[in-house]
Structures are given as structure tokens and as C-alpha cells.
Length: 330
Image (tube, rainbow, N blue to C red):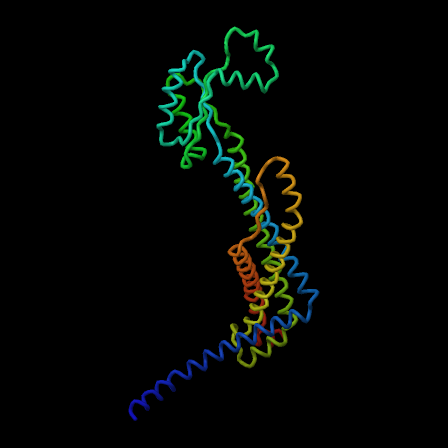
């Protein structure tokens, strides 16, 4: 009996908190439902706001996806970079063999291909069509050449520069060439464009907040009497603010969905021409869309911007709607 009384006492002690929590959740669910229903009652105005948000969100996200695709392709080009090592003109076959062994023993080189001066001249004679002119040369003007494949850990701008400096210091080496200058310029341009896209994204995010704020301001003005009555009967600012915050959340969610649909439609529309252009240049470039994580992040950012715009508008305009202020103005 004592145990039963204790259990009943514990249940009665927890029941008020449980009822309060259930009432809190019920009010949130009802407020969210009512806010969504109000948006559907004015579909044209709601759709215009969603389209504005969707376009503002899709533009920087699409540019970021394009830049990420370009950076992925440039990383692939950088990983296939090779170093060409030209020996001095007077170098012998023994010098070539010694240099090959020395270079192949390095940890930052994975493969070495030897092209002797005779092989280079024969290849040039075949590919250039100048065989008759080459017959008039007294000696072979081409040097011995080594083609080096760097290891993956040095396939970047700094690592390649250190490798080139080290190879140029070796005996019988006349010149070391690696064509990464254009790739470095491309990376610099993509970095600059990336910062520009982020700046554009911040500006468009501010524009989204202003659009949502202005929309919520109009909603507050249209429900001014309702807000006044709620405050007269003791409604707190949190209670009055909640429907408008949910309205901002619904605006943000709808804008995020519109942005996702615009990105998918643009990707589908451009994928064919991009693949044909890439095939003409024998490139593996392709546009990549949003992943599941990226889609979730887009929706969360859109909802956050909608909520922030609504909160700023409510904070700004609800303070001006007070029963005592209205009575004083009368």
C-alpha cells in the first residue's frame, strides 16, 4: 500500500509538468498549422515570396557548385602533372644512366621514363615531316630527356616547386620544366571567384531577410487588431510573436524547396551541352548537383533566413503595438 501511494504521488507530481509540456507542443503544432493555412489562403503572394527567395538562394549555390566542379577538374589535372628533365647537350649515355638511377631512388618520384637523344630525334623526324631537313644536320641537337612522375604528396604548387629546385641543382641537368603556371593561374581565378560568390551570397541573404521582414511587417499590420486583443487579455510577447515566426519558417522552407528545384532544372538543362563541349576537348568535366547533405544544408539555411527575417520584423514592429500606447494616442 505504501508503495502504491508513493507511485501515485510521483505520478501526480509529474502530471502537471507533463500536461504543461503537452499543452506547449499542442500550441506549437496548432500555430504552425494555422500559419501554413494562412499562406495557402493567399497563394499568389506566397508563391511570389517563395520565388524571390528561391532565386536569391539558387544563384550563389549554383555558382558554388560550378566552382567546385572546376576545382575538381583542376585537381585532376594537377595530379597528372609530369616533370620533364633535359640534360646538358654534352651528356653521355653513362651520365643518363647515372642520373636515371639517382632520380628513381627519390621518395618524391614514382616513375621515370628515359628518352635518349636518338629516340627523341627519331620521334621528331616521324612527327614533324622534316626528315629531309634533318639529314643536313651534322649532329643531333636534341638532349637526353627524363620524364618524371611525382609522388601524390608533392602534386601541388609548393611541392612541385621544391622538386624542380632540387632537380635543377643536379649535375648534367640543363633544364627542368613543369607546366603548372596556367594551372596556378586557374586556381587563383577560381579562388577569387569563390570569394566573389560568397560576397554575393551574403548580399542575397541580406536581401532575403529584408524581403521576409517586409512581408511579415505587412502581416503584422493586417492583424493589428488581433494582436491588440491578444495583448489586452494578457497574451505575452512570446505568444504573439510565435505565429509570425512560424510564417517566416514556412517562407524559408518554401524558398529552399524552390531553390532546389531551380538548381535541378538548370543542371538538367545544361548537362547535355556541357558534356558535348567536354567531349570535344577530351575533358572529364561535368556539372555536379547537390548531395543529400548539401540539400539539407540548403533547406536549413533557407529556414534560418526566414526565421531571422521574421524575428527582426516582429521585434521591430510588435513593440509599437501596445494597448497603453494606443490609448494614449487616442
